[in-house]
Image (tube, rainbow, N blue to C red):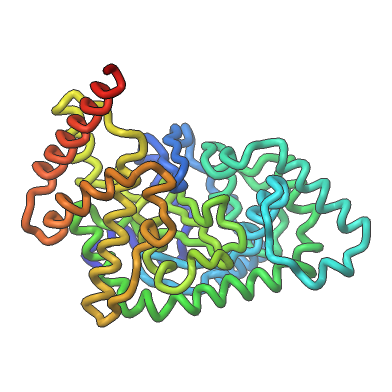
Length: 376
């Protein structure tokens, strides 16, 4: 794997990683399968943390202890502050969370504190927390903070968000975090043998297809709430948040979706993204909305399935097919074209650029036929 990695560091999301990613890259792409945004990167990278004294060094050690599994290019975490952040998003947006036995014993003042914190988080839309430039910077900074460190004065985290998090931190430590941390670590433990057995080959094939090295390390935070679709990714800096309790992200699907989400960290999907843009531009045809995401689902699902079949696991159904993503997102025609024309690219039997031009031509013809029928 070493030849596939463009940067190695023992602890993900160090200040150096955040600064390097934001300083070099002009845009930040964030995504859910049903919703995507491209936003401007931070004009300035998150400010470096001040020189560390004994307390700060202890906080850093605590943050490092939240690292559960390292498997290049991924580093998987169960982070107190990221989980509290995700929990407050869920509560603010009235999303369902796992029921906790300890909640029944919670007194009214504690319930009021949670309501107040959720109201603060509710002042923004969920997509702001997932896609917003400032919010992404705040989440990146939050990931650097040790579980018992104080948030007051930490750069890039807005005061109202700091206040909301701090107001319920101790409550969360007593009721919520022990159960959430256990769920996160259990999810990572169940994923670990799949990644160790199949991960190297999946990573190698994806990197070869997009003709880019992995931007390591890719931080992955396991959390009980991973957004409305179960997972989301910010590319700059590379950061995946994925649900540890959503059954759709369990078993071998967790393996595929780990690499699917990780693939979002490639700059515009590398050579594949370049081919998509060039093909539609060459034909003077507008690229269908989120077509690139359909291609990403197809690639990660097909590559994962092929590796599994080669290792004797023949019954795996890729996530997008099992969850009817192509139908729900209106991508069924794209799936059929990819099945027919894109598979030879993975086999090394067809040129990537020429094949994408062929697919663009077919999409343009289908669009013309539909417009003609509508005009009759």
